[in-house]
Image: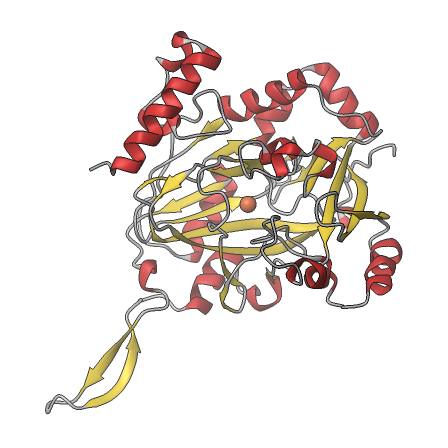
Length: 401
Ligand SMILES: [Fe+2]
């Protein structure tokens, strides 16, 4: 049953799209697609998803990752990963608690990342948003922020120099509607890119921009108009309260360009960091084959994400929004370039409806992921592992800048 709020939202969304895109586009949409405030075309085939047969175990994960680049297992009972029940004796007296999930968190990590999982799991220290941590290296995804927006396709942490080879999501509670985690095959996306975009990717790479706020200053403002909920401030990112130390870490350890700016509204300091990274990767797979993939966070970090996100951020030029991406030479991507990339992601994507206990394990260098808008509570866990260092990859393709 649809809630009245949802009905109203879908109705106004449909009217908006009819005005902006025309009825011929609307006809292709299904109900949940009207929900997307920041996406004006239908995306992802729901039918082309392969669900692995059998119980979740290490072998099934390994085999499917090698064959398909992802593994989805249903009915795992993982929704109870952190649930316990009380054990009583014959008199009904409390004796102990026991875990009602047949898989422990350690076993889960072993199935996903292999026997060396203790050394292979990764955290999200340098990620863009705050995430709750349930237990060591099992995180929640941050759904507090922008549940009504489509989160663009991205390869996890590909805006850094060390990112996970494997990312996994576990569904504890599916949302009432939407909330899918679509996947897009970035090997095919790369192959289908027009030559001019491929050439620019090779020549310039991508420049990532982060405008990082000062926690102390923002929290000191009463009724702060700027919503920093979900964002990491430089104190969180660099683990220091000393601004000059944070800047020095950026310059000397990460080799970022840095700049201190003032927020136009609050007059608070903002640390801008900018750096270039390649826009694709050529890698050798476990089966010795070589593949080139469109691995990056070009769309995931693009300032256009903040259109229809927040009354304040959408008034700012892209470069002043919390995150942005540009060509490596500092030029903006054209609207046509962004649209071409969005459509290629869409055409090469798949999605499925989350059910309680579903787990998806993804090769982060083969498939990008996104998130549909949703209504209702949604609780998805995330695990990342097998750190991939660009510079240690022998087939690393470095951009010119
Ligand atoms: Fe992600």
